[in-house]
Length: 280
Image (cartoon, rainbow, N blue to C red; front, side):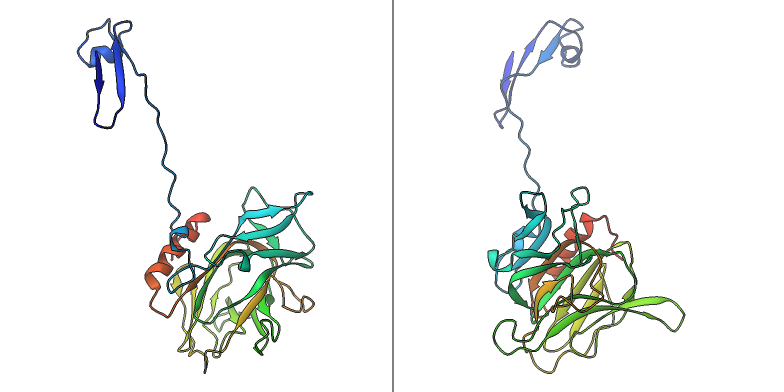
């Protein structure tokens, strides 16, 4: 007997063995064998990739260490930007090149003189920046920024810095400094654990999230002047210490006017899932 389903999967029944045929009413001496079709698996959809572009609510920059291009020695030569802006936001590893941690899908950045430079400075104004990373040292650390005139338009130097301080109750918290004043509120210290930081800079305010929880927003900047990032993992002058120390998994940017929380949440959930980091 042969049958064809509406999906064009065909099978043939024979009578040489007992079990499947018995279940289909052919008695203990029947068997079933299936021939003539191919099973294909549909690739999982990447919710981040679905938002690639350079317009409002889209992703111009998506740097994931798994997309690193290696040199002949197995060291990272460049991290390809998969976002809508393409090669202009590719990242080139500077300083001491180190192999990627293939088991963890991340790269150690800021250890010694190791950093990444974007091919083109990225303006953080009107952007929500997502950073999935794990710090491995305490104390303050320079994380990212750009020197004055980084894009040749007279912009001032801009530096993002992690600064650990003791809270009134004796606990330690972390604040990102260097953002438009007043800075966002403090976030958990998070040393040696994977953390997702989201920083959104708008003319009206500055917002900050830690693993999906928003901390107290700042009042924002007086004007939407450019705030560029070119160097990641160190002070933009490459010499000021201490540099950021730890692993980076992914850096993603979303163009926003403050009304893109739903799309931001899509990115957030996808990044949190990469490290099995629970949303708080």
